[in-house]
Image (cartoon, rainbow over all chains, first blue to last red; front, side, top):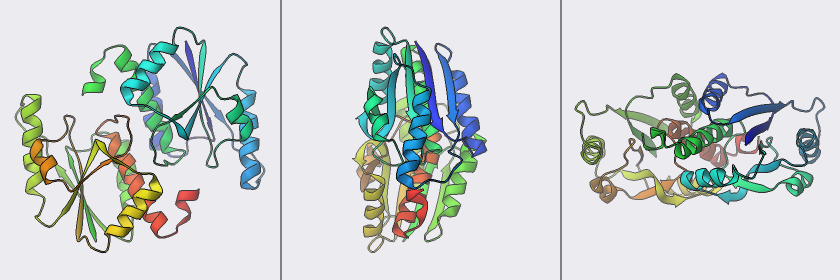
Length: 153
Length: 153
């Protein structure tokens, strides 16, 4: 299985960029590609902006990708459950695509395409900070699968 | 109301230290003190270590402090609910103490002393990363109270 992470706009805070890439680099057992969709150049009203952003995201998604949106209203897992869920899907999914939306969330079209919604917390995190949090959970999930000590440190 | 944040051991990752202090500095309406309890010098078995760590933490807690443990089994809030909860307690609490435990969690004595347990997520985060996540939520909570645009950005 391959994993693609798609997010909107560059990681603007240097510290977040460093921490996020560091966790992603530590995942050895799976090829991970990060795709940064540039922020729309034109300034749109909020409702239009999310439609435009999601149109761009959808161009990078193939018909057989398994698409998971990081969404406050999604399914919440413990780290162990998330790890078990990834492990179970490794067998039958070729490419798992995690999408972290922009500040205004996802369009209806994006929700229609999604196979799953995942919530990391009931709380709202900045769309920058969520990148580190997610990268750490992904690294943690694979450490649990591989029985590495990280989850118990 | 004053806020004290107590955690075990220095923030060892520079990026986490920078991000965490940055959020804390941005909170203007409330005096925030961070107390770092040094890791025990002796190497104890896991069960003893958390008792020793919590003994040290308890030395910094006064009898009229309102103590909130960051704990996976705690109450979970949305960011709006957390903000409303802080706002409500501002009236009648002099010092709110948030405690972030070490890698092995809290002792029974610490649980006995706590007034509340707060869960930021069902997922387990590293005891370093949790510092940034919590600092961001605290900053977000006060931005909501003060009607700053941050929560809607």
